Image: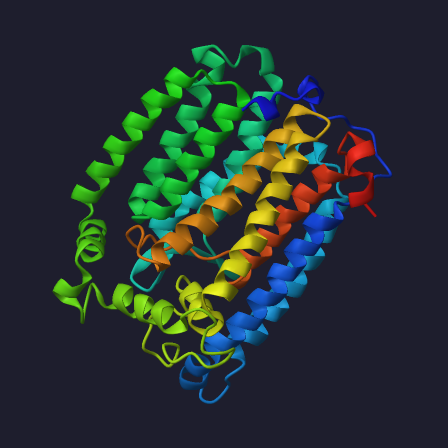
Length: 388
């Protein structure tokens, strides 16, 4: 954590004045490259299902994703131009609105694939995704304002724990374990970077493990997923089917893959091949080499995001960039872990790849906020060549 105790974090609140600094080019190029590869893989993974579901319109999912990608890239560039001090001033309002929308899900939410996690207000979206962003803004703003009080329980633990418990309670009503896990992990990372004493984080980790155990016992579907993960062959035509088919896809790819567009599992054998399990199709078509290449691009993006966080000119910028980068890293790690069978299925999509227009739009917007922080990066003698 020494890297985050950078001398330029001494200023708590973000500076207001405008700057002529430009966006970080390596970060921008990595985002665009991953988005383009994601669109290509989505078309390959989805055309069989689209052809069947949409009566011959094999480009349906791809065309829809392209529209949202274009909108998302525009939103990213726009967010990159906005002084991130705006998010400092509106952080608590954004969190309040997003939590309010989350509270509406059990009442007027839309059920998709047996899960009631969506709201339809013009477009279909998951309020839990907005809550993650709102929480990052709120945590960063409070930690910047209370920078020299973070070692106390009142300012370093209590407000963040209260927010996490409230959000976890609402997500419990949705039976949304994956979002709960990500929100707790993001919160823990930000509290660690913000200065909360480690003994409180260790205590929180114990509480979190206990909550997870109770959750699995109380929510039957989660327990069923856990049992299927431990022994998928015990019910290979039902609860274990998806895990087995995913492993078939990964194994079929071998070292170099079957070739782009030549997946067999996408012909309606592997469920959710355009959503949570698209990485299995990536492995099948591009093989071990292609899959590792894509993971390396994600790793470079995450490392660059943390580099921007370390070199931000104030504490709020550092914490926002670190929080959004951590969110991205967690989603990639958890999705790949699920697809490969390392952890039980959790319903987490792969950023920039999985089908879902509003999710892609929000992900690109989040990357725009990191780019906004990069415009105010210090240490120009180091970063000058990386900005254009």
